[in-house]
Length: 511
Ligand code: SRM
Ligand code: SF4
Image (cartoon, rainbow, N blue to C red):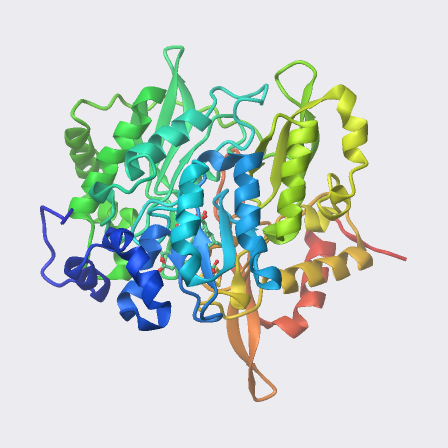
């Protein structure tokens, strides 16, 4: 759908190609495209429009494509994971999957001609990748322990699914929401610990009671970009659980029709809120929603420190447990995916959950099965009790596959953390987030120590470096961290991190 009101006088180049042909149009062309081969495609189709189907051309590995799924609330079942494992298995060492910072999966190494068949497999398995890239709503995140957490106020799984279904027309594609001015993030928190990082989403729903009725306060406008990062602000609105999809769609229509399409660096929702002021924005949302929005509840129910869900924990269902497996920097190989699916079925209820920390949770494990489960060899790789520095390590894709990257991230993050683990004793875990460039996919601003890739000069040469962020606070009273150090060459980073850990996080040197 074309934006109706306030059509900008000057469209940026992305808007121009969307006017030429809607992104979702490639859905009907995919079969023909795959017969032609990717080398024969129009460049805009190849590099941009295919992202409406979740297909990402990777200039770093041409011919090996990435497929970004959408997994509402990060929950899938063992059969679905097996389908995904079998897709990446075909590509041998080139095939892998990454758990993303939005509780989602990206598959790698895919050959272009295989996509029509892969989409059939996804459809049969009840999976979709539609609208997962470019100017679309990203994966809808929810509490990773929804439905099993004794402390939760509401199970967010059906809520996230309903929002996703509305925006994507049940995973088939919905032209109403495929031409937004920019990307868009939505999160639903269901418990007291804010495990979705509500504050960094364009829309976040946080639990809040009003006159003893349960509902959600609404936050809007949170985002990170290279130019600007902002925490979400209260819309001063309160809605009930059955209104989340309608309100999300109303906000999206306001954004679609009025958000700036001139400068892509100033197109995220917060720029519209700034431009209009919150009152005008709220009134426009209310008009689109079709009914008055009640004022926010005076306080929300986010009262806890954030949990990481690693290890074995009791579920609210008597006699059942969930197990949080630490997946180092979120990367999975096909055999590991098959193995996770097997463990989910042998020991649990067959479900697999993903977290925004790029880890896996298995659910429904009976007490009697715990001992045998803990002996499984996969848990040597995906630990239930990782060392404090590795435990909360998060990393974006980085230079291995991402052409925006200024540095390699995942391997470096792991190697450095392992070296520091050998040198230091730590009694507490430290949340370290790596991101390969200022786009901040690895969310360095929410970390205790955030590392953002950059370049600097050293000994007359340009070298990989990082800016260091600190002070990110998550959970209750979340706040974004700030840059404290600039342009540390990656080769000189270890002693800097070591000193920070010794001085600020209670680390002591090992004898
Ligand atoms: Fe991101 C673009 C990877 C979460 C902000 N992001 C990209 C691209 C698509 C660039 C590209 O085409 O290469 C990266 C794909 C690399 C690859 O091959 O994997 C990419 N982003 C990721 C993932 C995979 C990082 C990860 O390792 O987990 C995350 C996928 C989430 C998902 O499942 O959909 C990912 N990206 C984020 C987040 C974190 C979040 O949502 O909590 C952010 C910051 C929050 C936000 O968006 O407000 C983020 N990504 C960006 C931006 C900057 C957006 C902006 O407004 O300027 C870009 C660049 C852009 O959109 O122009 C970007
Ligand atoms: Fe790529 Fe930069 Fe995002 Fe990392 S932060 S995945 S390097 S765009």
